[in-house]
Image (cartoon, rainbow, N blue to C red; front, side, top):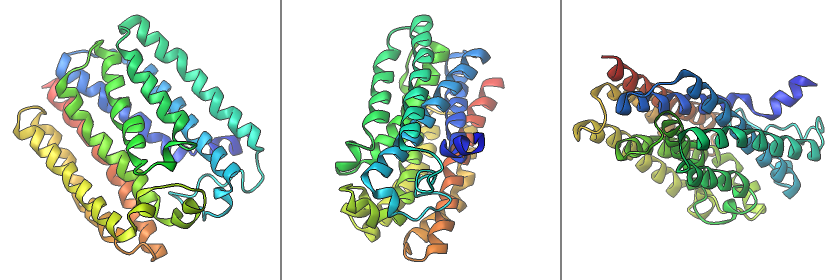
Length: 296
């Protein structure tokens, strides 16, 4: 039974939250000379709880809307499949989503107390992204921004604030790649679910723009990602070590190639796999870059 609950959280995705916390912590060390290991672990724990809440609430609403019954589960899309298989009841999954979000709240409150109230607006926006994503945001055009913000840019800035008690423009600019990457993570994973999502009134980019135009948009976002990373180094905003993140470019090219053939099931799954690798490895290498610059 414990394994079923674990699979419902979609653990294969939770590594993203750990890497986001790592990146934000390394940025804080580089820009502000601040490093508190306990704060880093606590912030990472809070992010993982929030991410579990996102995953389980998404599963619950997908099942209740009937979308879950029309999607084909892949390693990277289609939900956990737990509710569809009848392994857990909808109420149990909803409770898990609510409880994990409530458990994450004291972590945020703690950092507001010890580091300052300016963290509160960030946490409110992040919480709204979590709660409103499936029932509301997905039914508006271009919903992918919410994932990029709530599970990308804001977590990096939040963990940065947890270390430093402040925000900075260099930190914001350094967090933009996380927005792009998590945005792209969701975007490509939506390709196999177009028909099911459309039946539920969703307005993801592959639905509103069509798969071919969305693939071109995906290319543009990838180009922006690598130009942004290089541009921040050229402008002196980020350390030269962050160029390590450019090592993921070949995998981005593979993901891009597969995105133009979404009807090829094996091809799109391979593209999603490479995309996940780009999302995780690029942010990890950015963190390593900041870390190397901080210790030199």
